[in-house]
Length: 108
Image 1 (cartoon, one colour):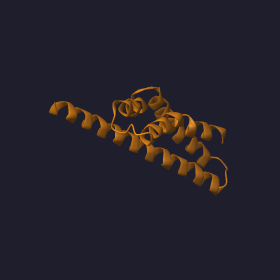
Image 2 (spheres, rainbow, N blue to C red):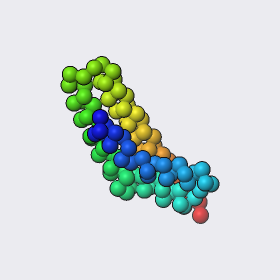
Image 3 (cartoon, helix red, strand yellow):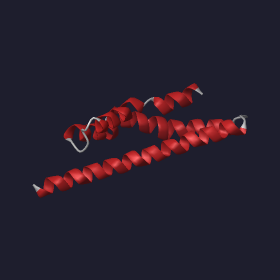
Image 4 (cartoon, rainbow, N blue to C red):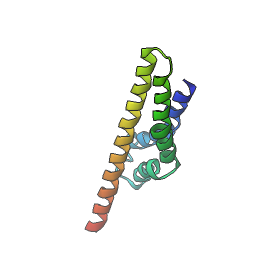
């Protein structure tokens, strides 16, 4: 359980920073772009990717194979599904931001 919580929350501060910048009115600015890209290119993305896309499936596998109640197994698979969903959303956001940024530079 401790491993699951650690894996789930290790990258949260970086994700929250991005949302705070958006709420403070820094959407579509260079500061927000830097925060968006930092999630993908910096240590936070490496931590997120390793923890949730490598550690998460391993932890879910161990949990499902162990003699745990069905509810615990379902929760492990649910956490894995949420991690995969957010990984997809982050990758899609970065692709959009980088294509939007390269499109802006061609116009000027």
